[in-house]
Length: 250
Ligand SMILES: C[S@@+](CC[C@H](N)C(=O)[O-])C[C@H]1O[C@@H](n2cnc3c(N)ncnc32)[C@H](O)[C@@H]1O
Image (tube, rainbow, N blue to C red; front, side):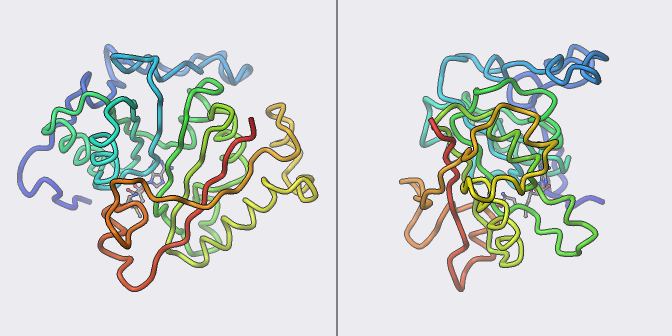
């Protein structure tokens, strides 16, 4: 299905500049066979994809049409941003927007963000993971597709630097209730045993992996908005969305 986001124009993901090459000559080599027995075998440091890998590094999961990553990268030129989008047309659309403004501190990857964190990303590389207006998958049989899962929180915790932040915004009440149930466990040592043992066995996490903080909108966001994504501008006109920050304990 096409959304005709290019309105007849061919969208250019500027492979090797904005888009991460995953085919021949790939910047993301195939997952090694050893990854099946040794999950860390395919992990690397994605900061190496940027001209200056020593800079602060942030990841946005599910960029959609890309307004947030475009604006935040313009306002924070000393930070490197990696946008991950699994819908090909949205990935292309966002990469094309970034190419046209000649963004030098942003790259886009077309893949499933949960799988990418799990199999590809080394420990303690990201200062922030942004997750804004994630798909709610309302039917019970689809809840497994929601980004927020215990497994995802374990991987996000691992990938964040100490003191790093997972920032979440949603306007979907039922998804927020789901998120809250997960966050309460991940911020509360009394409830920690509710995390499945196989997830707790993955990484040497403390019994209180995150502290929950209030969400502060970025300084560049206009009055009455939280993150000013495309979705928020279009859909959140009557009431502000839910938002919070999970900060990895130092
Ligand atoms: C409701 S849209 C919101 C887009 C944008 N964040 C905004 O607020 O305008 C959710 C986006 O997340 C993408 N997405 C959902 N799950 C994903 C995943 N596991 N990995 C990468 N992208 C994902 C979808 O393709 C979609 O573009």
